[in-house]
Length: 402
Image 1 (cartoon, one colour):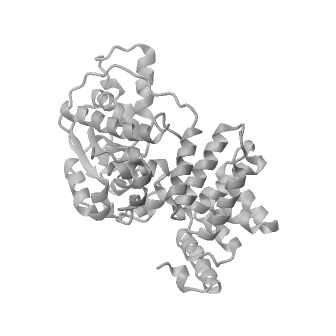
Image 2 (tube, rainbow, N blue to C red):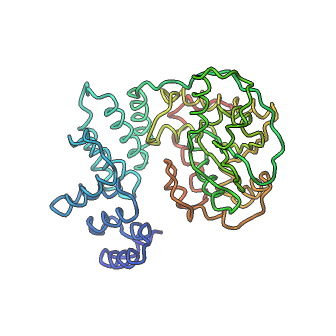
Image 3 (tube, rainbow, N blue to C red):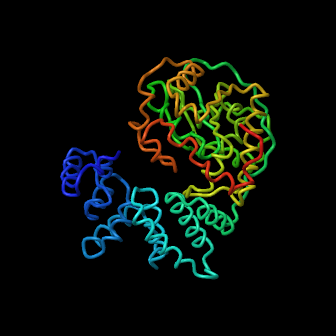
């Protein structure tokens, strides 16, 4: 039970003020329930580095105080000038409400979004954002049929995204790790536990976790553009992936790196891969219902998302068959048996156990769509999360399993 449910609004404010005073803004935001003053909730959201939530609450507050708080939130969001018309502002508001725990406001915002869907909306991406927002809110409200309808509509409005450049495979020969240093690629489909795992590993003193780096895709594009022949010596590029003199494993968790494992091994032969896998249906359903900051070329339909999941498994299996050292991590096991799973990963990297890896919520904030879940630490509350969606997404219910 949340603390807010046990306190009246006046005591919620008192508790939140005390938490803000000592720099515990996230806990202050959690303490302030739906009945607490909107201004206090907005200020706590700003202090907790949640400007989208603050904007949602400030717009609901209105008046001079609301306008001032909304202006601050917009500045921190970096909202472009194109958002001046009001509708995109509501989208930001809606998204925040969907992610926060404010179901009453979410219902009101859902009604606004209904009115926002003007026929023949000229800005396609805007319609996509509206539908994606509706899907997220309907999901939060426990209305799976409405969520799936909106998610499908959002996919129909998605803009074309160029597919990754096809290139010849780069010959490589993996080698034993030279001590506890080198490159670790954490790969997996989006929403498969890569962020949680990477944040857990970031707490280990023998690991330098660098988030989602774009070095490998950029290197692949540069080599293709420059006409470098596959098989050429790339060892001189190692410093791009593993800084010279590094004494720790460098972790890169860009999901799309599963396409560039050959290149990583050609540059740094001691590369290791940790492969995160989650139930096929749950992974794809979560992708469909998550408002990503960017997009993917395969996120065009429900069937296309499922097909990419299958292709991803084939790619990783191919690298394994060629001798790349790959350690598989089940997302469900990481959530419910974190110590056992993390001991296995650290042993794979030749590192000693450290209790700090069990506290990813104390690591630096993740910059992915999973940052809120990571702040909660490993838990199994998401298991069965999408069971109600199975009859509504038949494209995902094939018998193939990870």
